[in-house]
Image 1 (cartoon, rainbow, N blue to C red):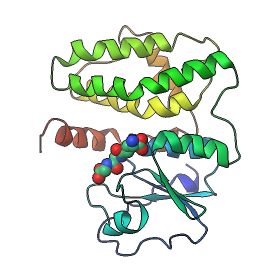
Image 2: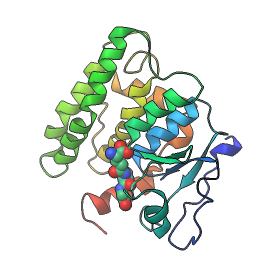
Image 3: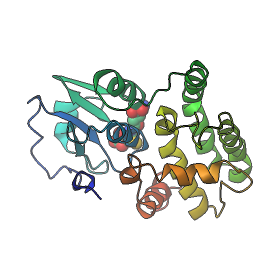
Length: 235
Ligand SMILES: N[C@@H](CCC(=O)N[C@@H](CS)C(=O)NCC(=O)O)C(=O)O
């Protein structure tokens, strides 16, 4: 693991001092467990911006008060401090990194891929809502349609295992959620979402081999604990 991949402990309410804000450093405020923050973390790594964008991990269960007061009034992660401004929303931030920083592009030039990418990304919130809704109902039945949709989408381009063939922003957007759904369905519901979905298994495998993705993966044990508390109301 490169030095920059070593996880520093998240800042908590006990960490009294905020970083020296607006001192010219670019900072990504994030959490190791948040899929939205993970998106921007992956994009930063993919573009090779580890030395240009500092990670500031926040403990979401014990947030420092200065985060809302001084950094990001929305009080959510991720947000990016850059050039004297603070910007939020993971999808906007992925595009912001692409437009404002150097490094390999996550956006293919092929118009068919661009169009399909926009279509998939426009659907991500709805798909996730459908999967979340399934936790309250007949889980396996209900979530099937969502994962069938993804398996089918993965078959669209055959020049690689990813949504647009090669690794792209679509994988950055969906990957953190697919990773978590895979863990939760197998650990909590004893159901492997890749069964009968021939594209999804290699997709998950190949995703975890991407250098930019690897260091961002969620700790499965920690995530299952959070899931049980947040979604199932178990302590
Ligand atoms: N639409 C936002 C969603 C960000 C979001 O909901 N982040 C969650 C963590 S996963 C958060 O910070 N929630 C506030 C909290 O947990 O206190 C984005 O795409 O960036």
